[in-house]
Length: 336
Figure (tube, one colour):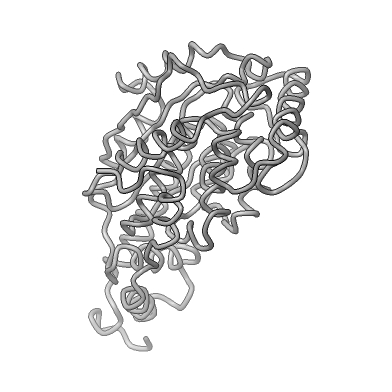
């Protein structure tokens, strides 16, 4: 059952969410220091293993129930010619996800995770944000609730993905509004637009920024410029924060959703790690604003949680080393 019915209530829940378990974090760090290896020899795997231990509340973390959720939405701003594909592709890809034919299905299967798809009123796109607010407050709350309610009580790590033709433009608009800059500073090729399409994207973002120049507050910015699937991702990440479930961030669009939380509450993304650096436009700049260093950089630009799912393999490696390696005492190795 959703614990909020308004944007202020959602903000209050996020602000009151707990930190990582300090005693578990200390115990994980202590255990790492006793494992049969030179200090720091496993590089960032050590950092990740300690981090996930703190959020799972145990010095020896496990990943038994990874959850992958894809949120899908359509966008009125596509009327501005910002995508190389029509909005109908969103519906078609949702069907593909549900039939197991997409990249994310294969990657989730690799980790023993089911893919849940939450389609958000695909027959009713958000409003064109160049003409007015993309969503009303009630619509924004409903989308946040959809994400919040999608998080499984069994999840011990969460990957959230998205599908929505036009949503790289939405993400660029959110980033520009939250962190400053113009459309051209934040837009990228997305699904493969040409130079003219890139210019249209930048113009649409600039028009949205001008239209909503007086909007303040990260959640209000989400309503003015965002999309249902973007809000749902933010809702899921927030629920994970409240429940101390670690999150793996995907690409530019997922990070734009995360940016709303980051700007709303200090430390709101302490439970999240950046899975990868995508090939999309200003993703690197956005990660820098979030203070996140990606685990991987493979030139991916697919979305749908695919990069985060690939990074889940690295996180699993960190977990099995943190939890499964012997200590010097256990192994009878001297010099530890």
